[in-house]
Length: 437
Image 1 (tube, rainbow, N blue to C red):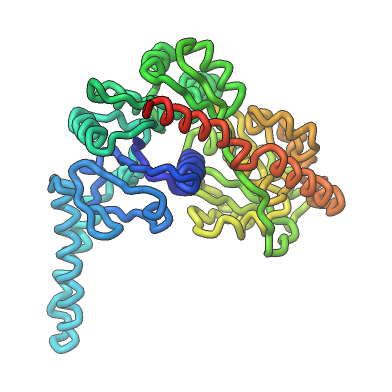
Image 2: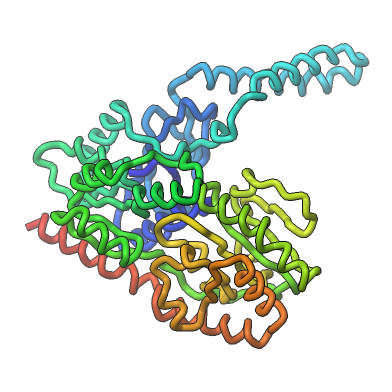
């Protein structure tokens, strides 16, 4: 159960996708229930990527499916506006074609359409354009739908993605025996504390206190921590629950593209710690790098670009890209200038899996201290140190090659899928065998 599709537009989606795909490849039958405030998203429908349809069956409350696309059954005011503009646009296109034989008879229609559309959408906040609202808590209708799906699917394991989804455990029918598993991704109260210390807005998720988190986590029988440090903390927070460490599994990737001289890369989704860290980098570090490497170019990938503004032509905001592998392959150095946040930074593991040199602050290396022992990453916490380290790597190909080899070795030895997911697969199978007795 989740409130977003596990797609590669953000770290949580990548993490969930890898885990679910591994379970499918190892013989698990999976139903994915998507719960979100669909009606307030101002969308009539959304599509499910083919690679997800191969992994699981998907169910969405108040929606019907036609092939790989879901359509809302609740025709709200927002949906009416959306359908009105769609119909008006189609009508305008037809009339425009007809106007070839009648001059500019339909020019007033064109002007009216664009005026109404601008008026309707001018004040819309960027977050309203997203289908998925971070921190969405299941409502009564969602919980009824979940209970119905549990009765029909009869799962051995029920997984809630994120702490605020743990309410689904309350509606497991009496007599239904299933392992209740919580996948929190990080400890939200720790993230809030870190954001507060650095004066970062905490608006991308529900603001849970530690007491709120503990209350929700106590509903689960098993909690999957994203790294070992979180596992220790979670065990003290919820002593009665079984806790497994489940980091992000990756495999070494062979890059087929050549690196581009002077290319830096930052990858991030639209969350507070990415915005804050990238702004700090552009303000404090980037000018220092350009003083010594004036041909340097920075590529920024991910929807963090939506919140950024920089007029330097040497900074390219690429947005969400379907071929992130090409960006990693072209980069000489990947930068992770994070000053706050919590949880495992998936962007670091991805960079290392492509054999790319990574310069990171201590926050970016949370739970990845052993990578320093492998000499697979370089640590830099202050602006001048970060700039000097990056410049040294850009100007020393031999040093880059050595660290890149270490990065590939580190990923291969530490983060293979079987090594990461094997223990939890065994636990799920043991539960299924015990249940069948």
